[in-house]
Length: 614
Image (cartoon, rainbow, N blue to C red; front, side, top):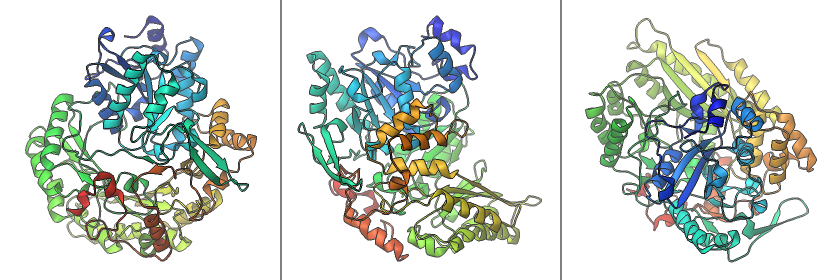
């Protein structure tokens, strides 16, 4: 329930529905009957945060407890933040309108490195010190998880504890422990000492880091009984783990405004640039009956007319051809569209194409990632041009007229010939459409090329590789544009300054905490948004502390260097990653997990089990 003061602000902002709460399926509880209040914060705006599956899962998970209440908090847009600061309105949770500084726990999901300044901004807007060391009381405890938690060092000074890995079990364990210590009247340090013993919990204050003269890490020393290695948490059985039967339905359009149904975690492919493909291992699948049941319940309880199957590679799901007919049996009767993102061109079957013809046709999206076979082999994409063209032929014969192709610039070993190959492959797809006798009559084709800048990430074979400099990336972008000859091909690419920052913070250490705080105090926030991004702020912040961003982004690292994330065990053997790196430089491929197990080591996190071995 919003206060009069809060409500008065809503009349003056662009999208008041971002801040009202009260949406269908949102959870409101009696405060007198609960022991624990959790503010789940997404450090981006409402439309982005409300699209995130992990937040939907954990929101419902905590609210399934009778003794806890989880509420949503998003980063206020610039117009709302300005009014909140001018009128002394602290950051509040949507369900109750209460200030989050009075909650027991404040949790951030870290999906993207350029959201870090928003974390600080939200803590400050809540009326809390941004640094963990300056927050003396046991509550509110500030925690964080998500993919960026695999290297949390650049933001470690601001968070009390991190949860690397999957959150369904560890979240409840932390809540139980915090309730116990609240009732005992414990200090923050007493709680953190016990929390550090939970598998999947990292307390950065319990680790001392020393440095060599050249700026590399000399040693990481745990203290207060903290483990030397922090093992990520995983969920072994996806069929039995908690999954919501309803989502909060927003009042306004959001980025992904549909039901999302998770079908499996992990990836069999081993693309060497892809962090998600490694940190979410081992493979664990849901049964098609479970996915079908959960999908139907979500549609019935939300009223959505579109459902998207969620995974890193949907067509690698072993029961996909059983699942789709089961879902279509009820979805088509209700005019519900089923979308399958993340399809692979090398297993896009005729049967799957026939099923997809039954639903509304949107564009098909595929990711060759590189323009030449040599470079696709170097990154272990294991896709040939023939497979791309054969899939395009199927799609065009099936009535599709729009194809989106994802590529990367700046991949290790890339040359300008590889860049030109992107335009050549797109042109071949265009030509394939016009050669197809079964193409839709009277309609042209659109081939969209989306080009991201490669950023080396922790726990990948490319974690030691240098990132291309801004000048190198801009030269390659210009070369690509000059190679595109057809108006049927559209090209979009990412700006290189944001990619540079992403590279710095993806592989940075805790010395960058000062830089992040300085940039935020200079006004940086919403750094992933063009209208807010101020690169000069960041350059000034780096200069203030005598730090060269190239040290983190553009430097090749040796295999024997201690990396900032070496205190984490994500299940992937370092020797395996080194072998994959060397194979990349020889343009040698590694078969995917269902052809041959490469002994990456991730299955040992799951008692030796991996669904890829089915």
